[in-house]
Image 1 (cartoon, rainbow, N blue to C red):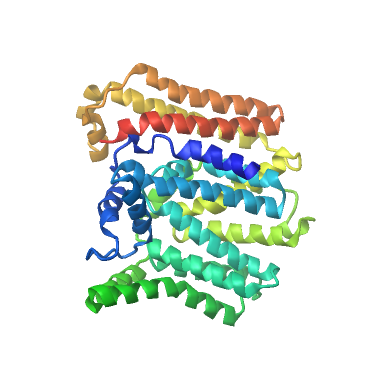
Image 2: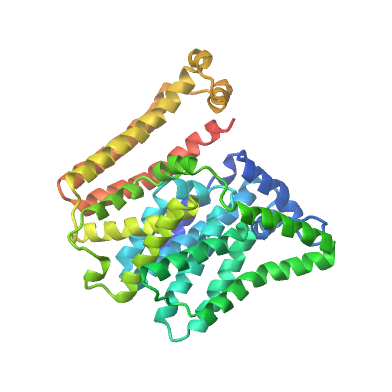
Amino acid sequence: MKYLLIAIAAGLLFIPFLGSVPLQDPLALYNAATAPVTEPGNGSFAPFPLWGWLQSGSVYFLGNTPFALRLPNALIGIITLLTFYAIGKKHADDRLGTWWALIYAGCWLPFLFFRSALPDPLFNYLFFLSIYFIYRIAYTVKPLRLVILSGICMGLAVLVKGPAAIILALLLLLGYWITSKGKTCVKPAQLVLWLLFALIPAAVWLSYTGIVYGWLVVQQYAHFVAGLLANPWPQSNLVYYMVLLPGCFPAVLLLLCYFYAKRRSIYNTGEPLDLKEFKVWMWLFFWVLLLLCPSSLYMVPLSFLAAWQVYRISAGRQRLRAWHVVLLLLTGLGLGLGLAAIVLAGVYKTTLLPYVQLPAARAFLQSPTSWSWWETLYGLGYILLVSCSVVFLFRRKYQEGLLCLFIGSLIFIAVAALHFVPKLIF
């Protein structure tokens, strides 16, 4: 019954009004342009086609509209939350699963990604499943099945965003091997089999492409991939830190709770061994992504680690320090004031325009969108929401305060996104 409730709630969050905003993100526009022409037999070639295929299917049934191009992500969002709930319930109970699903949906960036036309949600889900199946190899009597499933998920992830996914997975395995002092759940033969199945989806697709369109296309693809592997993560890390960390508020601040803990190691508790190991994998996942290749994928381990802290805090097994709550309040104030500042900049755009030189800011100020004073209430409302949750937390009513924070944030983000995103398209 709870699975059904989560699916209905996620559907109501991610699906309504998907087509109300035109596609303006450059990558989203690229996907919109290629989705209708990535069907077999029309002479086109996309380097990583899986996301385009999903959009093509949606376009085929619903037409080439923003709603159709975003619908796959909304459905992936529903599946992702159900998966997180199931895994959390498996390793602890349904409370952990509920918190994980709620926290992931209740942060700014995950919510916006599920309402976008970008390939990130699909890639993040497939990559996480692949890593999760690898982790489960040590706890199953049928490891071969998990090796195959993990390899196939990784192969599908490669068809979404390229072979850098395999490099990242191998880095995680290397990190686990180092952390566990040379012990690993994957035997050499299993690793070879995993790599084989990870390459099969791309090999099948390239073989088909070579037969239908000519092997020159495959050769060009090989050169393209070689260029990507030479610099698999070309983005500026600073930009990702500036966007991803605040974008995962309030979950990111809950990681600070780990800085205050009476235990010296995660292995000193009476928790099941599989749960301890899962936390090790999630920490490795988090640090490898954060330090080596920042991307939206880091929201997955971050959300679990935050959910684990919320799970312990709400059960009275851990308490928040005063500086945790103060920092939560200050960050919420900053986000609320920032939202109000956007409105004020829109209201006084003619006055501010001569003093602004940044191209993106000038484009915003020159847009014909009209703004009104009353829209600052969104930012002030968010400040009020965070303040209410902080009051509960200071009174040590942790469950009430955390529910107020995340459920309130979820509702607020949904409403604010529907109101502000169309106005920020310029």
